[in-house]
Length: 408
Image 1 (cartoon, rainbow, N blue to C red):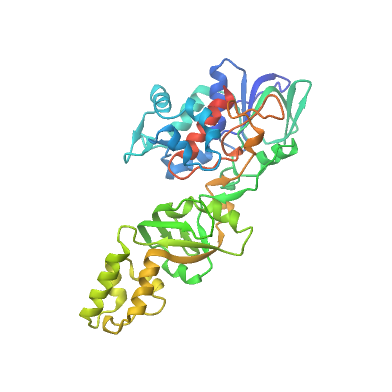
Image 2: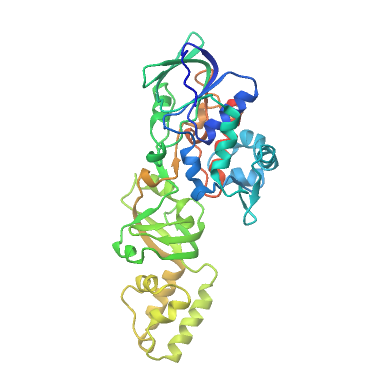
C-alpha cells in the first residue's frame, strides 16, 4: 500500500473507506483519469468483503432491475439511476472482463466461480495499485476555498477536489464497522436517520426458545405481527439460537424490529413453521391420530414435521399419549404450527450485525450522482446512505453500483 510522503498534494478524488463501495468509487475515478487516493482506517482493505458469504461473497442475483430495487422497500426508486449503470448483464460483463467470472449457484444467486471473495478484492486492488493508505482514520472534513481538507488521526491533512464517503456501517466493528462516517456527515450538517443493527438475530423474551438452540428448519415464514405494519413476511431457513432466532427467515426483519423496539418493550413475531402444509391438512391428520388412539406421545407423532425439542416447545408441556389428546389441545397446536407468536425483546448487538439499517438521509443526496445537495464535491456511497437491502447479494450490488456512480 502507498505511503505518500507529500501530503500537500491536491488529489482529484479521495475516497474514505476501502470496502466494496469505496473500492468501486476509486476504480471509477481512476478509470476517468483522475488522481485518486483511498484512505482506510483498518490495517488492510476489504475485510468485510472477505468475510461476506462465509468467504464466498454473494455478489448479486438474477432479479430484473425494478424487482431488484423494489426489494429494498421504502425509497427504492432512489436506487434506480445507480443500479441502471451497474446491474445485471453490465455487472456480469464487468467481472468477466476483469477475469473474475460469476456463476449462478442456484438459479438466483451469483458468486465468484472460484468460490473466493478474495478474487473480488484482488480485482480492485490490481486496478488501484499503490493508491491506498491503510491504518489512517479521517477525523474531520472541511470545505475551504473550493478544496476539501481531510484531517487524519495521524495529524496529516489531505487535500482534494472531491471526497467520497464510503466509510461503511456500524456492524462488525472487529472488521471496521463504526460510527466514523456518520459522525463526519452529521458534523457537516447532514441528517443521519436512526441507526439499527440489521441482518442479525433476534432475542426472544421466552427463555425456553433457547432450549431449542441449534435446531434449523429449512422452510418457515416469519412476519412482524404489529397492526398496520407493512413489512412483508420473510420465508426461508429458521435457526433457533441460545437467545432467540436467526437465519434467512429472520435476518431481513431485524432492522425493522430494532426500530419498533424503540417504541415498545417487545415486538410480536409470527412464525408459520410449516408453510407447505395447509391448516386443513394438519387438522385432518390430527383428527386421524386422535381416532386411532394408542400410547404414542404427541411429540413423537410430530417428528415427521419438527425435531422433538421444537415440538415440545410448541406443545408447552402438554404432551400426552395420543389416546388422551383433547380436541382443544390439537386445535391449539395447529394454531401454533401455522402462526405461533413469540415476543421479541431485542436484537443481537452491532458485533453480530451484517448490515446497518439507516444512514445519511436520501433527501439530501442527488440520486443521479450521489452528490450531497448541501456541499459541492461531497459524495456518499454504500452503507453510508439510508439504504438497506435484504440478504442475497442486494447490499453488495448496491455498494458496488453506488460506488461506481459516486466515483465516476
